[in-house]
Image (cartoon, rainbow over all chains, first blue to last red; front, side, top):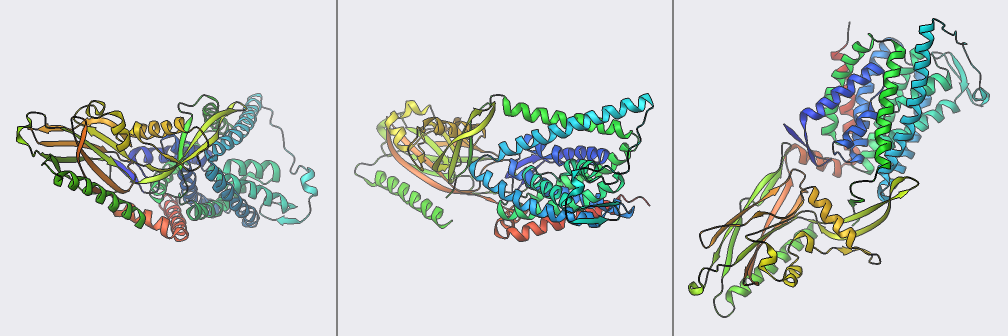
Length: 305
Length: 259
């Protein structure tokens, strides 16, 4: 059974799209990530134009984040103050990102930029996560668990405009979360991701937030950043396909619920190790495509009028 | 929109003039009577492509001409658009778009059918002049300073790969001496817009007559409404998309809530 996507202007198999949404939802539920970094390349792979994939996935992530944040909010795991500061940075970043995206689209480099950002970010984060989780696995096998310091102090803590974040038990410069928020906003607009895979490690390792409030707070600000990206793409490039977004939403929320239940059966470092492997595989595939000689050196784009 | 309609009417007028010119001038000659199965193709949300039936009859004026009834060519052209062709080159190990060339008025769809290979029907210069066959389409370069041929070939190659250009993949069949029919596949990824179906009648390598019919391919139903909404009210569309996402997220959370 096929469905015609009005904005992407192609027909796709309904069950393929639902299946992809379900599978990515399953992974995102298991690993606690939005899954945009997997969904966008997959959509491009099945023939959805990259620009439509990026904008539509932003829209889908808004839905996924709302559903996630509500669950965390009920458990009191959202630092709204921190979320707002990250958000201000995020809004600025997504405006800049959409602007960059529109320029790249007009000069024909948007596909390259999407692929390159994926390779760089997925590669770095995948490798770091993999090393970390392998170390953790080795340590637990040896039975030696290092006790971490409550707070580590870096140069970051010397920055001005200090603010107190009660829920996160932090007293740090507002510039830090603003900067992280802005970076994630840019990525979100260019790559069609919520940015959770950058945001979560940054909040844990750079800001030193307690892990319990990290995911809820990250999801909280992702709702607004992806909503902003959706709006900006709808206005400047008309690439949000609401039909595709709805199909992805409906199956990914079901997948996410199953994934969350599966996730509780696995150990934390095993989960992180598996996710790291997945990230590295996607990264290698994209890197490979950039390097091998393309089937056709020429590509067509829409001209001006 | 208005300019395309005007373009279409002038083309139709041009073909009618050709047809009239040939039928009325001097001694009676063969001419064409043609039609297509549908003048409006609706791209609905379950559209998977369709087949267009094109048919007609040759009105043979001179009965004593014998078995040689002539050759029929059928061309379906889609709306013309500007296209940018980019060429990749290896830069620091990775493939990057380096050169770009813009072409004006490239048909977004082009299909040719004929009763025998076109090269046997007419001389190359006639075919070139009438732009018969994807390989004989000539695209105008917006700024002509570069070598454009490989870029033009790329357009034909890519459009053929997307099933948007086809060159004699289906044949024109004759039923008896004068009736003929052919089908042209309209793929699911067909661009919407104003199309034109052209029929040419050749005899002994000479163009005897031509006919054309307009064909409209339009999005309809929900897809049409979504598309129009997205382009006419982009800000409202964006807000609607966000509201849909918020409701979907809230619904999912409410349904799966474990209490």
